[in-house]
Image (cartoon, one colour):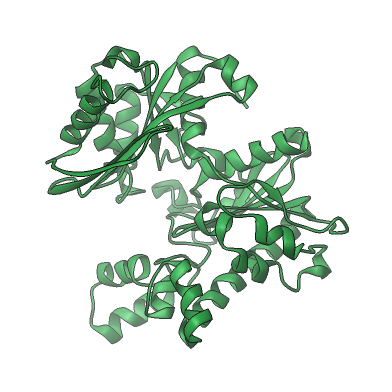
Length: 414
């Protein structure tokens, strides 16, 4: 099957075409055929397109909405000059998988999209006002462009975390707020955490029952997850992606009274302060320079910038605290797994996170750590380390494609 994987943002559309089926999944032989990204939808859009094994195309096009963007992609896909293996016409796209951020408490697994699923996603817009409307744009556009005969599947970021126990996902506020408004911790990045747990099992030969790990998805958005017996039992993001670790522009954990205090002191409406916490905080807010960890590390190394160093150290310290908390919650873990753009490539960040954790049985191998960049899956702890430390490249799109295949074929999966 050729699966068209869609990740729709408010003004962007990211896609991949992945060849997979149940036999290819079993053999880990799925194949990426093409990928691309359209940014700035609604104006002069930036378009990046690539067929596997060929050079990348970068161009611009006036694309007014997601439907126009999708039509543009389809024209490129079926153009004889593009030459995507196994793709000659739109009929060679057999199913569509959508990354969908918020499924609330309703969706515990990926599901074929129908009117009821769309209605439920629309009902959850209050829970994810930044994400679900964007995801729905991609679904609406795909239904128009491909028609109702091509099956579409929703894969929810939140579903992996619905195994959290009640005492972990509830907030200590009056219980009626949960009953009335479903205010609770949902967690995000579930597709990535789930894939890392799968990859860890594949590399170590462990079963789900024996998978007890802490996964750290570190990028511009960042989250930690405690995975016990293969299931998420806790995660750092909460009711929204704002809670938890310090991130590129998000504050992470914060005393709620700070919000009221800032509203008063700045004479600013609540919405403005929330926007600051989401878009102008984190490593950007502390450094005053950038939300890009690569640039911050360069500033610290080359210019000895004090606030760059402060932002980096705060970022690492807060990750350490979550590792300690999850080690306690799980009664120990067998491995810590770094992933995401920072987790997979920032040697210095991994070093600082693991520094002085020998008392918890974590001993980093400095030389192995230096080698783990550019998408390599490597064990970077010393043999005597009681807790293994891994760098594992995430592949959320592969999870989307595999789930889409299984749902369409009505097959259970790992």
